[in-house]
Length: 134
Image 1 (cartoon, rainbow, N blue to C red):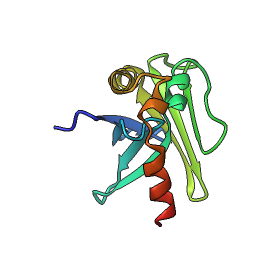
Image 2 (cartoon, rainbow, N blue to C red):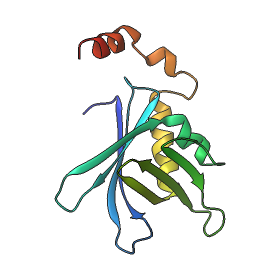
Image 3 (cartoon, rainbow, N blue to C red):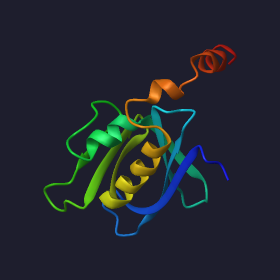
Image 4 (cartoon, rainbow, N blue to C red):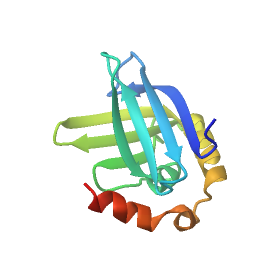
């Protein structure tokens, strides 16, 4: 068992569809600034997005993000829902997630790496090696 990783699966609503989509949130302590969300496609493949953990943390309380990924509470309809908007040249997705599920995921991630302590867990030399050895 890897104790440096937090993974949580949940069903989400994608683009207002009534059919839920299986998603997987993951956090790895060696990449302390980022979270990943993956969506299972109908062919059993996963489409994955990586974005700042801080977006998810801030998005629990207020609008967060100005780029391709934005997170906000859904205060107009249901306070128990968190909205994740993802945009790319290939399209746009609005994902509705259970707020409690995201809070539980972030609590577990914060146990691994407290918010504000990410720099203590980030290996700059390994990152430079990775991006220069492409």
